[in-house]
Length: 300
Image (cartoon, rainbow, N blue to C red; front, side, top):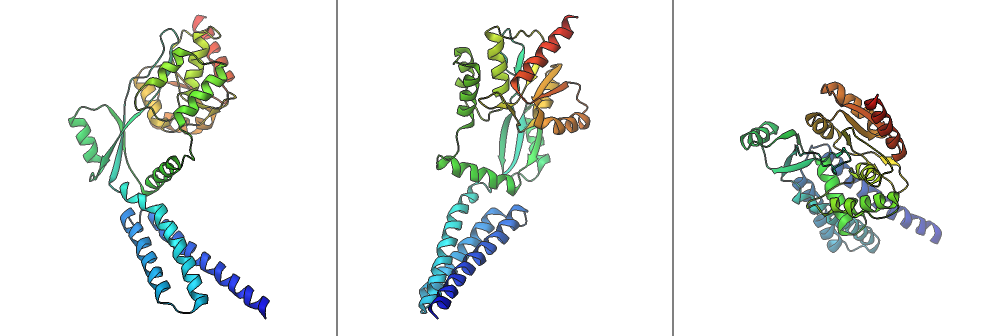
């Protein structure tokens, strides 16, 4: 009888966890599908937490009180994890702004970066575009921010608060220096810029370092984007459409991108009638080989 009673308790505890997780999952799904807003979502979690807390206080039966205590604790953790979403609710749109590609003199390797501006409580995309046009800001495109984007931003911020996510810029610097074998002060100058974000300049910086020390020669303007690992693998990047549009607008004839972005790039090239010749690589050595081939063809 004691074993049956213990099994029953275990089943009730397990059932309580499953029910709370299902409840949480349903409302999270509604939020991610943009059916409910962030404030409503957090408010629902808060109300459920209060209801469970009151139920725990009022219940007298010890067995059920333990289950409600467990459910209340889980809901408190969920509410605490999701409450930062209310600070992201006002951000409605993001505009991607054209900035001139960077390059080190004598390398002809152009690093493609994208600036972005977030807007609060804008009615629609057209109103953002009208504002940017009025202020004569050279924007590439404007996107409406969805709840899934807000949720990802919130989670990344929490990871940073907990020091569980390495800074992408620091990681990029370490990977570039590791690949080159030593720190290069000229490369490190790049990292002294204000408001740096992301790791997509890694491939371009590695190639710039190789050219600066004479391992590679390049006399043809080439736009480059791609993250790298410390072993020289080229990793995929985001904001590819905006970077291709910047390369096109800058009249750079060639662009090197990660192989894992190649399919997306082909679609963008087709949709926007891009004239830049886009080449993809999976390793830095492949990029070096492409640069040599491009220069050989240019000298024929």
